[in-house]
Image 1: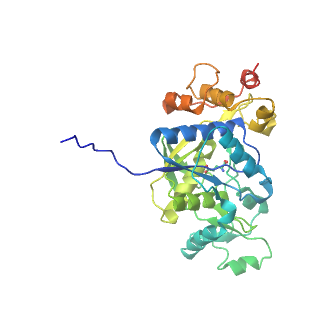
Image 2: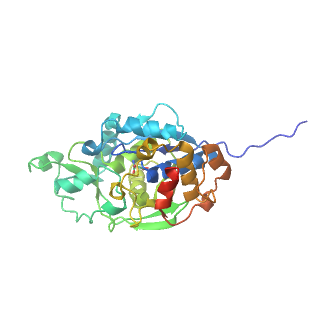
Image 3: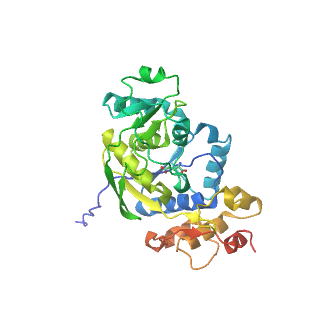
Length: 324
Ligand code: GLU
């Protein structure tokens, strides 16, 4: 009789790439997406792609298509079709209603700015001061709030909870929700779901249980775990929050550092192999800046080699991309 091969647990895990089309793909988020892809390949996870295009004014026309094209140019793949948050308003509204029905969310007529900011993922340099709870318990109904004549946003109660994020890369971290912003906005006054709620609803509905993203969203993981608990969505998600690529000033790579978009280097002649080689070098997978393809990075992939500290984008990196 042939040996009976006992396979390990056949549970399928699912991860996602979740670009926000509020600007073009740059080297920093490209690195996170590539590492997400490599980890998924190594672990045998399935991959979805979700376009986070809820952030009305900041979403740039054509930017989603450009980002998908650039991810494909790097060789990344995902299951079709891609999901667009802008087409899922109904599900976010249902989640809001469920929270309101349980007395866990309330209408808020405080400053517009707070509510607007909630549209996008809060990156490290954009954290807001804690909300003092002004509107909590203030209105018995949404109509009463509307009678103030001010736009209504919706906040979720956080009740001074401390949430532990047991991050697979960053380690065990505790967040006191009261200190990191308090009751946060889950629906904005423009009628669109805020980032935190949309992500939780989407991930849960799709069955995403493996989340890999930049460490500036570690704090958001605490809010998302809280929301998942309130919505009864289970505790199955594991997180990997990875260090960022920063400019020479130590801040998250962004426009302020000049044009670090992938499209910029592409226009100057950079190839996917150069970009991937740089990402591999930045991630401890290659000893020097050298060209590589995804297969090569996958062969060498080991998340333990990834430096714990942010990586700084140096003039030598740019030179390499320009073939100098
Ligand atoms: N769309 C978010 C961003 O680009 C990522 C959100 C997430 O991964 O949860 O920052």
